[in-house]
Length: 278
Image (cartoon, rainbow, N blue to C red):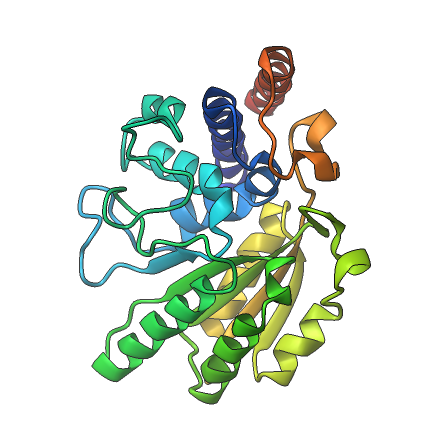
């Protein structure tokens, strides 16, 4: 995909996010929207995957460590063809396979059940190590929240990744600077994030995580990096794409009501129309 196509796809994914959360009347829109461009690039450009064969042995793996932002992953998987887009409206409903957190046993395209913060990166490190031990060439990607990296297990996993030289692993931190209780630097600051990953022997790239040119360059640089894992620190806007959600901590884990939903969809429709005119 070219940049414009990626931007259009990300806009559609954002529509899916707000539709799913509105339908569920609960969920986590803020961090799903901030990471939508990362999700889009991974699934439509970067990863070796096939929606018709979601369990193929040589596929690249993705672990959503910040599992509460499942609406973002689900919308991406739906638009990539893993299941019908219409099913997003069943999010968190009784009997739906689209649970509040990713479930590898029931959702096509989900490689790891996740949601207990701090644990996803450990699973990703295990997958990357398994590939090395088996001489397989698949790559492993994991997305963490910046509040999530306050968890000690994140750094235990990072220590192993650096020590074992897992250059088939890419850790992405969605650095939108907000967690459930407020700004991360006012609650338990993990800054400087880049220096911490460097201390664990990672190659670190810091980017604007809502800019596809920078996203593209970062993942290409990660592929070219040998002998060490890569951490991409993606500075993003929480709630990106919906004006009243942007940089607003209250939208970390709250669903829009009918009026708010209508406003969000109208804004995203207009953004899509503007992209079609480019």
